[in-house]
Image 1 (cartoon, rainbow, N blue to C red):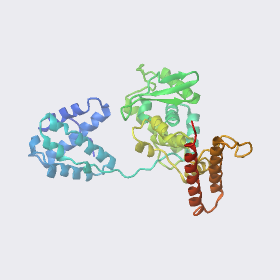
Image 2: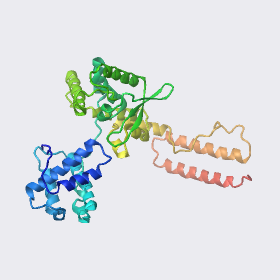
Image 3: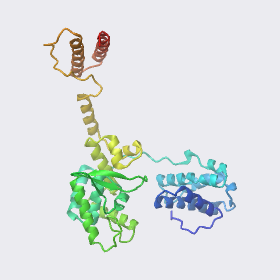
Image 4: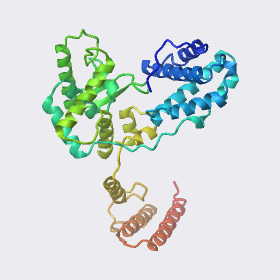
Length: 380
């Protein structure tokens, strides 16, 4: 579907665009553009299929809004579900019209269920072999786009964040500890991502390319010979050329570097909360879409949890031997703790724990109660 360009002639256009201005005051230019596009689609639909609608009071859920939803779903070539969802969400936000023009009924024109639910997405990181080959090829080329793509791969930043990096994006946190300052991005947040010496060298190389550029200095790390969109296309095209040169049949986009980074960090032991911060996500659900866990990963985590369980009784501080124990309360409590620990170790040696686990649990609980009773005898 071709994007409808202004000017758009419709009696409701001025009111819709005034509401957009109110809603998107603090939003990015791309988001503002999406809201305007949604309004244009809706108003163009009304003009073509319901020309009699000329005031807000005439708008109805059926047939105007429901008809527009069906119109979105019937486009050729079809709009992907995520794009349709964005249009519906944008139109819902235009409930600002209801308050600007005192028309409460407009709030009920769209329901939450009208938003198409996206299909479940799985993480799409590169395979280890693809990742290795692509990194090698990018390092071999060592040009502007290759270094920018490597920066995305090694930091997990979005491609849009990469092209918006400032020339002075490096931050020295402590002697030998560097970080990358990532500007306001997709979620209207900024963050500082820890980096190592290899990423610092990448930034220095990109600064060198910036010095060589004939584009006037603008405070950005990557020069824009034409505009931001052209630079984004240049990076995506460069990755496609690398894929073709390596004979990789799978279509690749720079965002897959972000998935690969997230999976790599998770497998390296980075906590889930830390990974959320590294990626700049606002909800755990977003992060789950980025990190891939294979059966091998699950087996490794399971074995680690069984060998060093966190919920079990901690081992006694002293040796498990009873030699040297005194007939006092402290030694008695220590002996009970040793007994619980030994029983837990015994549990792990059993091949069939179906019946033994219940017995060990009862005995361990009984020892815990005995220890609690004995502590009541402590005169302290």
